[in-house]
Structures are given as C-alpha cells and as structure tokens.
Amino acid sequence: MERDRANVWTQLQKLTPNEGAEGDEFGQAVAISGGTAVIGAGYSNQFQGEAYVSTSVGGNWTETQRLTTGELTATDGLAYNEFGFAVALQGNTTFISPAYDIIGDGSRGSVYVFTQSGGEWSQTHKFAPNDREWDDGFGHSLAFEGSTAVIGAWHAPVNGKNYQGAAYVFNQACGVRNGNEYQGGVYVFAESNGIWVQIQKLTGGEGAAGDYFGQVVALSQGTAISGAIGATVNRNAYQGAAYVFGSSGHTQFEEQKLTASDGADGDRLGISVAIDGDTAVAGALLATVEGQPTQGAAYVFEWTGESWHEVQKLVANDRAAFDRFGASVALKGDRALIGGCGARGQSGSAWVFTRSNESWSQQGRLDANNSNSTSNDFFGQSVALSGNTAMIGAWGADIDSNTDQGAACISVRTGVNCSHQAKVIAPDGMPNDWFGQTVALSGDTALAGAPFARVSDNFLQGAAYVLWRSGTSWSLQRKLTAEDGQPLDRLGFAVAFDGNTALCSALSASFNGELSRGAAYIFIFAGGSWAQQAKLGASDGVPFADIGQSVALAGDTAIVGADFASVGGNVLQGAAYVFARSGEQWSEQAKFTASDCPEWTFSGVKASRL
Image (cartoon, rainbow, N blue to C red):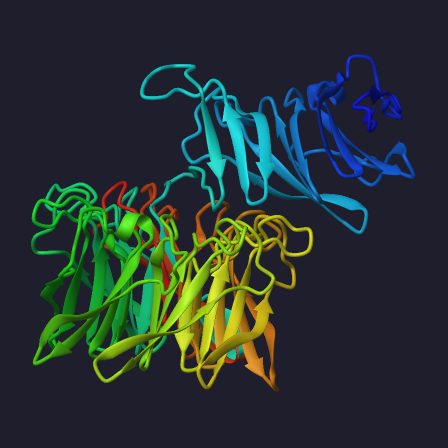
C-alpha cells in the first residue's frame, strides 16, 4: 500500500510466495524498512516455519531467493517451531522469532538475528533472556529501533503470578542458563610470535553458582585480580569479594580472597577492581555509609610480603546517598581515581585520592566541564589513569540531538590541582552508541569503547576509538572495528590498552563457528597504523557465557573475564581466561576460578590495565 499527498492509501501490489503451499499462513507477521520487507509463514514445512524477503526495485516488489533466493530458515529449526511467528526489520538486520523453540523439556522462546551482506541474508545470532521459563512466550512480539530491542513474553510468570507477562529490553549482552549457570570465569590469553592463544581459564576452586567471577579484572606485574560481586561472605548475600591470583611462569594460582572488614548484605564489593604493584583497590558501589544508602565505598588492600591486608576504606568527603561511589576505580602509584556515576542525579562525578605516609586522603572532585551536563550522563561509569592524566567516561552524554551518544573527559594534574583539558567524542557518533562506557589510557593515547555503535549497516556491531594527544589537543587517530564484525557483536564492551597494543572485547561475537560465544580482539600499532592482530576465544567457551565482560592487558599477557561461565555444577560462578603472546602468536594459558565462590556470586564486571 502507498499513501499519496492527499493522504489516500492505494494498493500497489499483492505479494505471494513463489512456492507457497496450502496452510503456510504466509503473512502471519510482516515488517518493512525502506525497500525491503520480511514476511513470516509460520506453518510452512510441517510447521517449522519460514520468513520471506521481498525487495522493491522501481516500485515493483519481488521475492528474492529461498535461503539463497530470499527465504530465511533457522539453522536449527524443527517441525512445529513456527519460525516466522513474529518479525522485525531495520536496515540490513531482521529479528525473527519462532512461536515454539523446543529446548530441553519444553517450549521456551528465542529470537534469531539475520543480516544482509551483498544481497545474501544469513543467520548471525540467536539469543534469549537469562531467566526464560517453559512456555513463557518469549518472542511473541518484537520491535527494535537504533540500539534497543523490545521483546514480548506474554506468558512469562512474574513474582509467582503465572501468565502475567513481561517485555524484555535488550541494549547490551544477554545470557541464558547453560548447565552450571552463571558461575562465570576469566580467560587468560598470551601472545607468542604475534599470535594470541588461550593459556588458562581462571575460576575460584570452590566457586559456586551466581558468583559472577570475572565481571571485572585487572592485571599488574604478573598479578591478576577479579571481582565477584555476588559472593556471599559470612552469610551476607551479595556482599561481594575480590580474588587475587599470582603467577609462576605461565601458570596462575589463586593467592587470596579479599573481603571488606565491615562488609554488609548487597554491598557488591568487586564491582570494580584495580591493581598496581603491591596495592589493589576494589569498589563497593552499593555500600551504605553512615546511613546513606547506595552511597558507595572503595577498599584499599596492600601486599605485605606474605599476604594481602585491607588498609583503608575510602569514602567521599562530600558524599551523598545514591552516589554509587566505587562504580569504577583506577590506580597508579600513589593516586587513585574513583568514579561515582550516580552522583548529582546520575550526572556523575569522579574523586581523586592520594597516598602520603601510608594514608589515603581525598584531593579533589572532578565533574564534567560542560554546562549541558545533565542527569543520566553517568559520568564516572568508567575511569582510567596514566601519569598525571585522568580519563572519565560518560556513556549517557547527549551530543547535540544524539541521545546517549556518549563522551569522555580528560583532566590533567599540575601539582595538587586537577584541571579539565578536553572533552572527546566520536566524530561519527550516533544516538545510543554509548561511547565512553569503557575507557583506557596510556601516555598520550586513549581508547574508548562504543559497544552499541552501528558499523555500516550492522546493528550494534560496536567499535573502539583510539584518540591521540598533541600538546593539549586530542584528536581521533583510528576507529577500530573487527574484520569479521557482525550485528550485535558489541565490540568495545570492555577495553584495555598497554603500549602499542589494544584489547577490545565483543561480548556476543561468534567464535569457532559458534554464535554468541564472545571474544576479544587484539589490535597493534605498527608502521604508523593500527591493524587487527588476533581474535581470542575460550577453548571451552559456550554461547552466552559473557566471555569478554571484562578485559585486562599487561605487556604480552591478556585476561578476559566471563562472569556467566559455569564451573562444575555451579551456575553463574564465573571465570577468567589468561592468554599469552609469543612473537605474533597468542595462546590460552590458564583459567581462573574463585576457590570458595557459592551459588549466585557474580564474579567480574569490568577490567582494565591501569
């Protein structure tokens, strides 16, 4: 149908499938974007279902191929799936759901993602909510715009109320339960002769489901630290903890579990971690301080030669409820930078602390130097330190009319004073890119992730931006994208930077031909330009384990966190994988897990080399 200037609708054409059959129910669901339409036929092929693509050329609509001629079929489709029950389309990406996806003992919903390249459509992802239930109807309705998708689950139980229904909003990685669910892990990669390979997977030896170990990781001089925000400590649920791992050669071993001396239920210690030499800092963004809920705190731990000990609890002098102080942390020598993304109505702030005579004190507070700074900028969600320079990300910043395009602010220290130097943005930024969700800094070079950025026509492929300083001015040096990038990969979800090497995770990237396993990409600067060197993935990875939730990099060693990884029979325990480089080759060396993580502990949220 077409509407003319007089607002009158006129039928232009009637579309039917070239090889349709009785009862196919072609037209069960339809979506249109520009000159492309996707039409579902959920009852075709013994109710397996199909979706047809039609395109308009010169005003004439024609069906374009079946799989190679215009029909999309789920690669793991079965009879009675009714694939094509719901469809959504935007540009070169379409979401298609089956009415029934038979998984395990019954029907649970899912959504398939297909993309077009060179006139060919192919499946790139399949995803589902992490709490899906039998017959929840997930995928019964679909919609997506920009970087956000909304998916209906009309039969979903809510708080014990059957068939109440729910709608899921996806704008970042989603996970599903697989075996030992959500125990989590951290994968370690190393480089050898220019090739990165996995050398180890780190999990707590006695970790449990729900630890989310690996949600954040950091690395310094061969010592790694990973947060476990879901850890139960002395019966305090979600008090959180951090685990420190030492190394001997290419072998990593658990050194100690760090907890807060005054920790309480729900503090989430380990939501952020940083380590430099014999000092470590861990954030607890939901800690109550002097009766102020969700004010947040950060704890400093030091290595005494035999063990790690808590030496000080950091809180802001000008603190307030809901600051979320400790949402991010960075550490360099005697300086610490603590982000509080909830401060000032979620406009956000960052606090500078310095150490003198073994005692830490607040030196200053940094706010976005922008008269247009508003609530929900989330300034302080990510922070980085290098020398006398600080970088603070604000993924929710609006740039002109671009909502949530994101930005990052650079501050420099002169003596005891800090001053604003620059605000950096992506020159090609778009709404909902989330530039600055993660940041890294090394000398005069900065790295900022934009995990929801569209690349060409690839929805949510993601990118990372390399920025370079000359004098006091910052400019874009290179936009990093994956050579094999696909829609929904989310490259730039976590970033780390050391010397001429950048490490960027893609939380939903395919690996070894398996969709949504997650991966991390190595980029190197050589000969005046940046190039992709390697793609790292866990040797025992599975889809939706959140491999790449966090990353850390130091020299020729990389750590990749997987907070949804299962360990043994523990759901959500989490793990961390260690990779090492030799020459240009990277290989997996170790897998870290927390030795005592209980079920639902959530290990590892963010990671960076500080």
